[in-house]
Image (cartoon, rainbow, N blue to C red; front, top):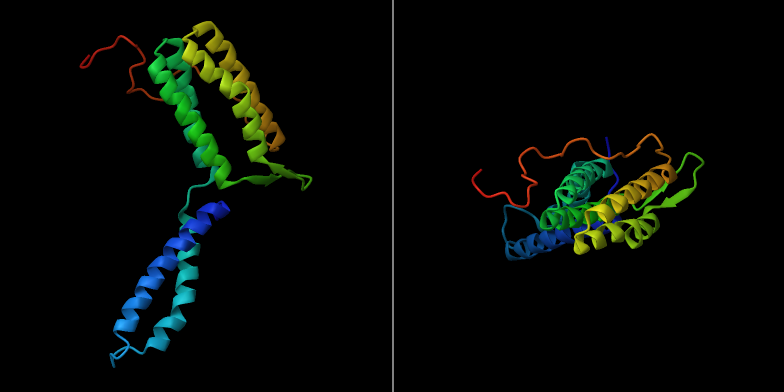
Length: 194
């Protein structure tokens, strides 16, 4: 299955491959007088090879669902870190949640709904970052577990609003029942080894 890749990611891949091609071109010039390999043959095959490499990289790049699984993981663990009042860990998972939400939007910045209308996910993310997600971060800084729980629930509403706007109302987030990670100790007073 082909996956969508943002224009910025494609530009980076193309720039990298062009750089490799240019280095190869320099080597070709050095070997120009070599009777074993005509320079024209290598140059003619360079563009199709570059196009094939770009297609291969696009095919191997993670899709938006993969990035959203990471959001799920971090946001789930954030709930348990906040509830345990492990504010350093909560801040870490909050930052990872923000980072991976941005990654998901870079992968597919614009979606089309079933009616064919464009949904600009960057605009939705921006409104989420400026309100519910910012509130979660603020409660972490204030180390206020009650406000944290309220802000977390508000953030879930923001997530669901995005899912509905993206024609995916069946993706209904909820308060997690157990941490996504079984190896992380959420107790802020825990010592190592346990």
